[in-house]
Length: 362
Image (spheres, rainbow, N blue to C red):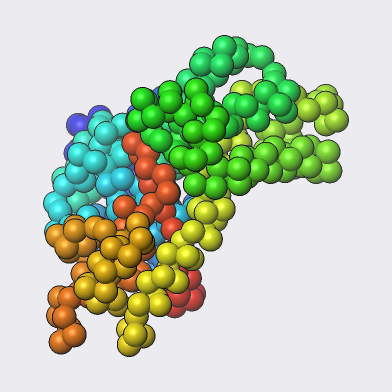
């Protein structure tokens, strides 16, 4: 792969190398669905037009990182590890925490870090390929967690399940997903239902959220059969009235959880924002650091991050004559306030600035 990438400066060759490298890394024979890539490019287009370009009409690596972060942030409030806004702007490499560097080192080495790509920059098509790669990695991660839950409940992957069976699976999946690598915590919660309800905020609403996704799938099968077939959530000859679900169906449901959970959790984000705004006496979008910490002492459990941590996040304004202040929108986007922390991504509060930026870009 290295020789073919370095062998020519032709942009077409580089784009083919990028596509092939991604395909080989993901084990799909180098084939990327062109319709899906076109759809991603259309979603990226408005942001792309506003980015500074090289003489070739491409973007540099830092701009590519920004573009990828903004895309996932505005579509599903996901912060992809290695693409977070708090990452130092002058970082030269992609970083050990980068999802691509962790999972597809050959992809990064042969294309994204190739000398020619760094000289020529990255095209819109390159960006679409990176997005598609990350989407596939997230899909594979979800599948691996789901397979683990199937095994724990002694359910064969090849067996279709009833709606009750899927509900049980999704409850267990949510515990795994929310707790991440905390195996001891997962084991404790799954062994004690009352402990789940006391440990996971709004657990009953979380369960209702997953049941709603199942009902939504049932509705599409019964009332929108063509759309269900196109989305592969129903199969030819499938009886829409017989509520049975394959592993692929459940995998699709957990993908929906990842994409929509931030919207479900938005009320908690609004509550946090309201508490911060109430402390902003001058309506500057900032809270005096002293007031921020005094609220933590007065039973507000959220606002306890250290001053150095706030500084690293870019959430601490130390230039005001009023003294040190916490920048509200930057703080809300902090990793410590994200709802889910997986090995590949964080599910965070929606960024209010995305809507404003979108208006400007359009």
